[in-house]
Length: 64
Image (cartoon, rainbow, N blue to C red; front, side):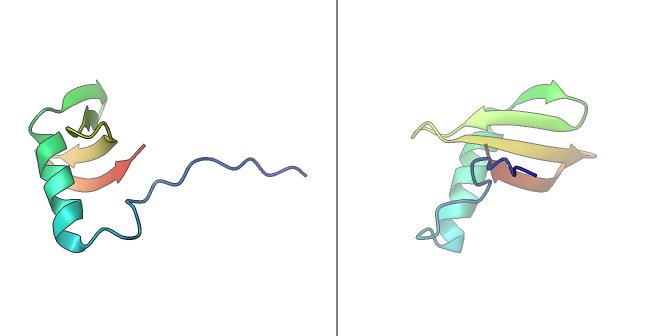
């Protein structure tokens, strides 16, 4: 069986908590609905971040 490798859905390892939260906040302010509870946006550096929202609260956020 062949395993398919997909890109990592984690923020860069060298980022600290503050950098991750700042990127999420920046992208959240420009989000657009993709489907259902999934929104997406880009930071000023071009990183695409996807959000899972329930009742307008971020449940999960991850780079694409």
